[in-house]
Length: 292
Ligand SMILES: Cc1cc2nc3c(=O)[nH]c(=O)nc-3n(C[C@H](O)[C@H](O)[C@H](O)COP(=O)(O)OP(=O)(O)OC[C@H]3O[C@@H](n4cnc5c(N)ncnc54)[C@H](O)[C@@H]3O)c2cc1C
Image 1 (cartoon, rainbow, N blue to C red):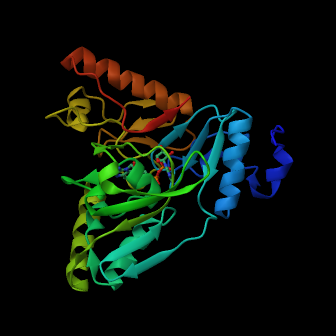
Image 2 (spheres, rainbow, N blue to C red):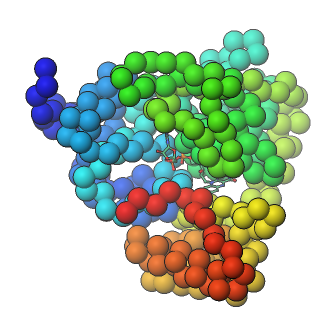
């Protein structure tokens, strides 16, 4: 059957919401096609809808890395209502992709399993963290990965072992929708994990503007350089466009001081890139995903 998929078929899982409600920087207009699937079969329907209507499909996890401009003519897929699962089987932890990172770190701690403490406080989901190969302090989440389960473009569930995925700096070759991931973590004492959590929480609290909505580091660090340091050396800390401001605490963070718009942030991004290039000849590359 090749009928043009009717939006009515999906109304029970469609949201009338604004992207700002799902975005960690609290920016985003009303979305035309925003879906909150509850099952794999709902996901399959959404894939079908997007493909038959030739609309690009974009999954969202924690929304901590995405700046969205025009939300028309795009299908956004939120993971909040999908089943949340966590299983430990001797050495292997299998977790659904929509699991919140900080909840996972706490559950792992109770199971005397550690490893992800270096990422603590990041407001992200496991699927998004894997897609971006999130990392900090010289470590990446992919170091603990064994395999992922995805829903592929043909609508089939497939297991992809880690050695079939390429991971690099804030990047992975994952193209399909991640449903689950299996990890091997480290056996540790609960107290040891707790002290690691406290240590990394303090580092982040002391160095990042956690009191304002933001998307983490806006730019990747150029080889051998720190993007934040380059921006700071251009005297840009505190620079504002509308309600978007370069954080005084960490120059690689743009914060929303109230009602920042997509354009405020993108204009500030362009200003930073221009100034850093003029002073150093270095082109700063975005770490965040900007969808116009
Ligand atoms: C305060 C703060 C601190 C941060 N610190 C760090 C840090 O230390 N290190 C770091 O690397 N990043 C950091 N980030 C950035 C961000 O958290 C990471 O990029 C994270 O990996 C994004 O996860 P998410 O669930 O929010 O994904 P989203 O922002 O929702 O999406 C990110 C990407 O993942 C894709 N995606 C989401 N879910 C799935 C899925 N199920 N299947 C396939 N693709 C999917 C999206 O399509 C998109 O391409 C920080 C962000 C904030 C706000």
